[in-house]
Image 1 (spheres, one colour):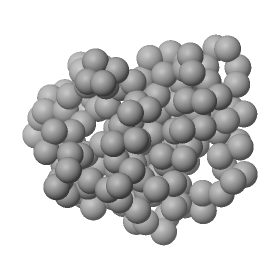
Image 2: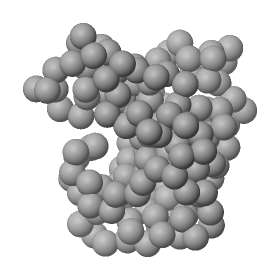
Image 3: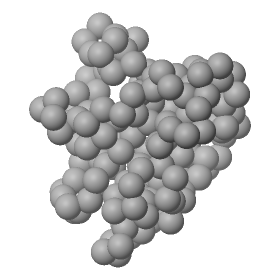
Length: 163
């Protein structure tokens, strides 16, 4: 898996100050995407054990509210296998911190058994999330007044209520 960027002090992609991992690879190709460079699965740098350690260290300070995954597309099947390991470790190490993820997939259509992004680790990955922002970015529905979303079709799902 490759990643495009790590933001260690992100205030735009979830509540509080967060560490955000922007993974590479996305098949949605949404018109007007803010991060189209990350559509390419080869974009950026290789995600390594050192990358994971860097993220875990960045999460350490008490003022960091949690981790956010975005991209690219965290739920591309190629990315899930690596990300589930990171999420497992974050949840074990920092149980008090929240975990958010953005996805262009629709939770109850694409991330369920038989869905187009469902893999053998999808359920585990979802189990670590506190919040999932789902749905593709739709430029015609863009609304800059929405908090933590780019377009009005996207939903903020509290995953802890779905467990």
